[in-house]
Length: 121
Image 1 (tube, rainbow, N blue to C red):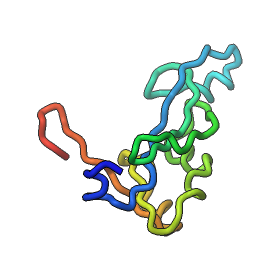
Image 2: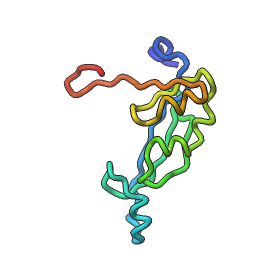
Image 3: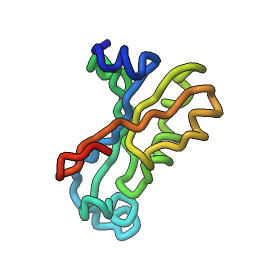
Image 4: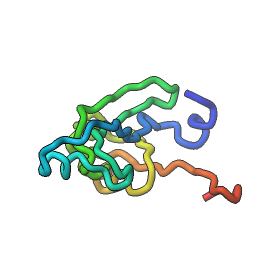
C-alpha cells in the first residue's frame, strides 16, 4: 500500500470508478435510448472498475447500458457484497452513497483533488 494510503486511509480496500465504452448506435429507438449516455452524448456501454490501493485491478463488473446511473450500476454490480465491515471505499462524490456502505459497515472516502486554479478541494 502506498505511504499516503497507509497514513490517511489505511483501511482502503477499493477505489471505484466507471468506464464508458462507445458502441455503434442501434437502429432500434428503444435500444438507442437505453445505450445513450447524456454525459458522453453518444451510445455507450458502462462498466464499474475496482482498483486496490496498490494499483491492482480487483473488480470488473459486467457491462451495463450507457443510460444507467453510477449509483444504480454500483448497486447492481455486486461490488457492495464483496466489501466487509471496516473497509473503506474511495469514489467520486455522487458515485455511491454513504448509506449504501454504512449498511454493510464500510466507510465512504471522497478523494481530494485539485481544481484548475491549483487550490485543493
